[in-house]
Length: 161
Image: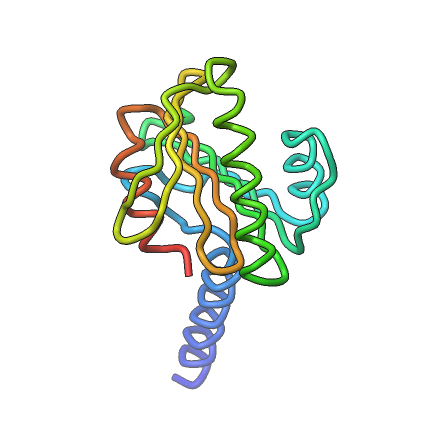
């Protein structure tokens, strides 16, 4: 009996630890999409910097690849966490101005919308629907298939602390 209790306690602790470590960085699901691959640390930092074409000044970075139940890639999420909300606000402002200034290139249909009380920037391009926004110290960019995007962004906004 004691062995079973110890085993169940250990199993619970292991599952809780795994859940917390993944949950602290990216949601396990957004809309009907499930997190299939997570990049963090230096690997994520390098990829985020590469996408911006320069080195950014953020603390933690995460990249998630989300798939539907058939296993098809349907979304990608980038999260950059800054040291302060002010730094995150500056970063999202610069990003919005750059994307808007280059409208008609790889992105178009630039809009500022409100979802669940959060100011969100919206663009279309590269076969995806894109949303980017700030939440606290985090700058978040979601690229998703148009069929999944609306449900995914609404769910994501509620899950990012």
